Image (cartoon, rainbow, N blue to C red; front, side, top):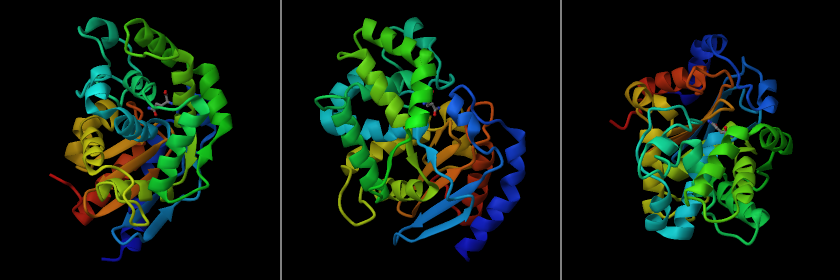
Length: 306
Ligand code: GLN
């Protein structure tokens, strides 16, 4: 089987879905993305990158960054501390939902992949100020992607900081109930910056491979503790595609994490990493063509872990 052909065919077959969704507009800068774009990169076990479609367009990590902040928070604090601030259960609610924070008792956010849980996790990252914490997060992401050029897209960051009132509301609520210990504005600032980190499909594919290998980076060094890499992938299966994670597990069956930029990071254990971009989103905020494309790749290459 020629992987180039498989990827090219998957792009051709699934581009039609782009017109069935919409680009995110609630972060104004994201509305500039091309709704017709669709690209995929695959990083095989030996580190080889294969790409198809619109792969050179950069985009921001958005919710995919939640995986990286979780890894760093776990490395910094250990499981006990992190999971005293955030739960381990899927929600069935949209990623930016606020409702369960007050109606459930006890009230830590249900998991680290919804916005409330991710902001709580980000507040646990160690460093003397936001700049140092961001630099530590960038160091992890650059190592996972084997790309020292990765940095924040300042336009997207500013756009989200200026409009992120729902996230701000959640963060202040979390401060009020004792989930965030430090400065709320610092936690939010780091969260907005991590969401605005700019990458490409190739970066995502390498990051996926790092998770697929249980934490060994593209150059063979240990980047993530294997137990933490395993835990991150487990959250990807149960909560990575928001409240569509159950359907995604059935249709695709690969640990994955999506972001509202239309990006998807997928890690096929012991086989490969996959990065997808397709800014047109379905109703739940996942790349509409990207999910269909991964479904085809999973079927063609027998990638389901189940
Ligand atoms: N930055 C986005 C937000 O906080 C991330 C959400 C997402 O990608 N689903 O709203």
